[in-house]
Amino acid sequence: MAVSNRTHVSIIADILDTAKTYTFEGQKGVTVTHLIRKANVPHSRLSGIVSELTSRGLLHEIPEESVKYRISEKGLEFLKAYNQFKGFAEGFGLRV
Amino acid sequence: MEIELAINLIGLVISILIGRFAYVGYTVVASPNLLRLTLAFVSISVGFVLLAASLFDPENRIIATSGLAAQAVGYFFIAVSHGLKSSFDFAPRPSGTFLIIPLAVAPLVIPGNSIEHIIRSISFILLVYVSIETMASYMQAMRSSTLMIGSGIGALAVAELVAWYDFIYPGSFFFAALIIKVAGFGLMFIPFSKFGLSGLGRMNQLGG
Image (cartoon, rainbow over all chains, first blue to last red; front, side):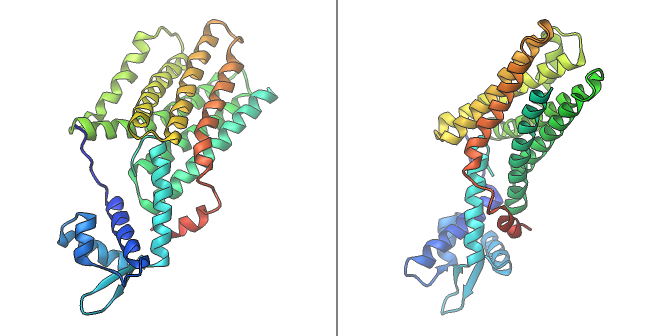
């Protein structure tokens, strides 16, 4: 049986994709709890990735009663580029 | 010679474009598979340069043989990517070493009396392996781009086989092999061309 090993970059793409959904559907952003559920990674790992993405300007932090995150313009560009390169690698039957 | 040079240059341009796209992809998403594809197409491009250079000195077979060897190295990098994928998917152990078996066996099972002959045999085996793996991926995902690239790699394998007959019947199959080879790269380029090249610079800024 094939085992699907997610790469670090695919987890980042899942996080950004979730943030994108919660940014453009009339919502104020995504909470860490939602990210954990959608990206399917433990809290300790997710916190590190989200901090990295925020410091690199791919996610914006919105301080409210509970911290929420929105995808930035740079994050959208990264997601678009990721999907293109994913398609390119899959063309060769490979994964990014 | 002019036709041969032109065909080699077309192959060179296509492989440089694919290699550049793979490299930008590697800088943006840091994927090891994209790095391997970059190395593969750099090797293939170097091979085309050497093959084109050998046309200016037809007596010196070392340049042409080096070109074929560089391209075989390129095919090896693509095969390694598939080998690693298969080893992770179906047998979680360092079975990438199995790739060495066709390399070791090729000179023994395929009669040959020159280095060029052996290199072509190795290239053929690697390309058949990569083509089968790519087609297997197509059967899973049914993506038309995978079908195109798998067919392109298959055409490269056919080109190596046809070029091989040129050793037996010198001069008869050489151009046919070269045209099939560039057609193979062309097939690989069709799905790639839809990704476009205009956004490469902008994507490159996302890297790091």
